[in-house]
Length: 399
Image (cartoon, rainbow, N blue to C red; front, side, top):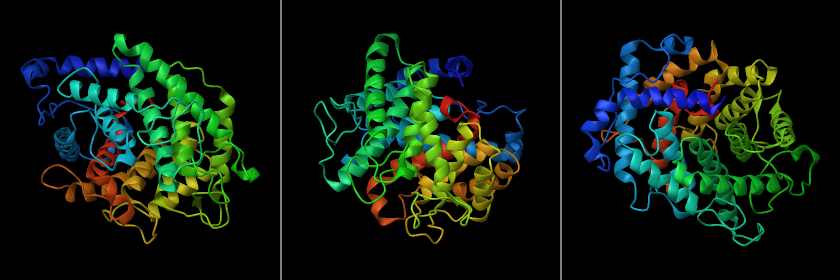
């Protein structure tokens, strides 16, 4: 999808908000600023909008507005959102995407200044080697001689944050556009370099994994999904992204599908983890490549209907199945698939999420102990992104 489409939708939203924005102009930096809850975020004529009655969409929008207002109160003075330092700027990027997915533009409207500050913080985290991560290897070349945990989180920070910068690029202020573009170009070079690191297994060709060289597998579906979205987003934004790396990544994604398990695995190996997060990631990746009707995507969608996200913050009986990450990938993937998968998956998911929102507008930190360290700015942003799937404001998630 082109940025012309997203720009026109944003312009319509900004015009509709003009009177509200004037009233709140002096309050733009206030922590409790919130958008007009009556603004339409979805195409009422789209079949995807028929899955909920109008009053339920209104409840959903109000819940999201409360979550964004709460997120605004959490933002730090440097523009970041709170999390463990090794989760930066990935978590800040997810928070920025959550605002943008609900129609908020950097530099415009009640959250404009905050989104600008978040963007500048993310940009400030880029290393000399092109990696976009607060903590990670610096220098002209990407060193893989880093702490294990840091090597894992730096890979996610780079992929998620590079995607976010690419999505914001089309709406960047003119005075910052050249700097913004330079950062994305360096991030692209780093991503393409990492895709071509030596693979011990032929099955891992085309994918990505951690900064560190660890274990038998040199690619995994989780990081590959984020890196692939970054490449597509950058290409949509006008950057020079060859088709071959995208095609190679899609081939890798398809190799993670296991007919026996009816879904996608975390890796290509025999003992890959089969989680809702990976089911959604595989569906989303193939849908973006035009494979909505592939046997892999349809089979994994059926699997997700049997392994729902209805039990809030639950692990679905799988020790490594992160609920909020699963929720995000599953909602985005099922929206891409459309009816009947979206129709069956989304309504009960919404009911569960609205029933478990905290009074302050947030959602709980991850139930999985290891991921609780990333806090509930992380989880709240993922819920807001999940509920925004039908909004279609972000080009990368447009069907």
